Image (cartoon, rainbow, N blue to C red):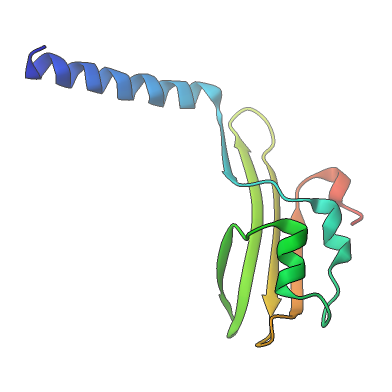
Length: 113
């Protein structure tokens, strides 16, 4: 196969993948986490180890106001219907105990959690 033909084949392959993604009209970021376990979190009591047992490894980690944070998130974006998102951000003290957390969701069933 000539170099020009190989380049055209690779370009066509990329275009096919891109078209497939656009045609699907959706994208997912993060990973699912057990929403029912959010009610088990106790501020000032629940430890990082217990959070890891409940939710698995965090999707993202960081710092917020000097406190270690773990984020669990699942975002499903769609071009043809409403997007569905959930995220849980936990803040830990220097001993690895939850000092605060935020749970946000666009799922109607999560409204009363």
